[in-house]
Length: 198
View 1 (tube, rainbow, N blue to C red):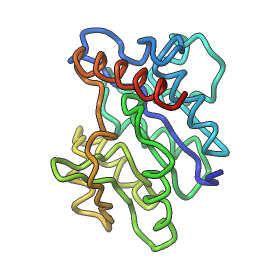
View 2 (cartoon, rainbow, N blue to C red):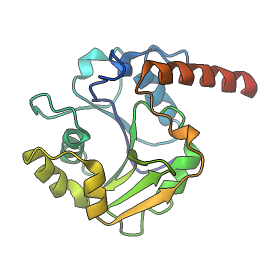
View 3 (cartoon, rainbow, N blue to C red):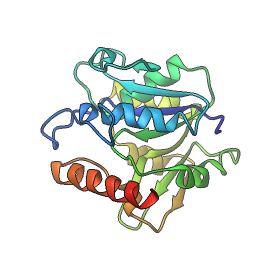
View 4 (spheres, rainbow, N blue to C red):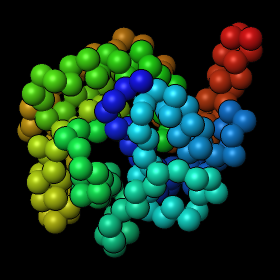
């Protein structure tokens, strides 16, 4: 199991989905969040869920509620709260809406964790994936400053920091469930893979 703590980011607004995607059922579980939490517990020694309000979830987990930030739904809030809450030097983060990122991708990122980087982030040919990667406590002050100045662009911070971008050729595992069509695609894919694995 991975010793680095894992934090699932589940505090977004879900505006493109049209409903709270963290609560959508997935893969036989009552919610996407519960599915992610339970599967990642098999890979990481400690798993946490970063969110706005833990009361909306109906399962037991290690929740870290965002500090009061006047309806700011950016990950910045989560990072500041997490580093305030957890006394660790680094965390692996994963967005709640990326259910196909698995042990192979995580291992490829974490094998570089002791090389002195501020962040180690997944990258595919089409985009960066800031919410799939390792973040060091060295960025805590930068996150706090971003929150105070209402600047929330993670990619800008990453390019200004000592960041290692890890290239992945297979774009499909980085599918984000932002729109209803992507959610339906993910459900279909999961069932197809589940049937194949049977």
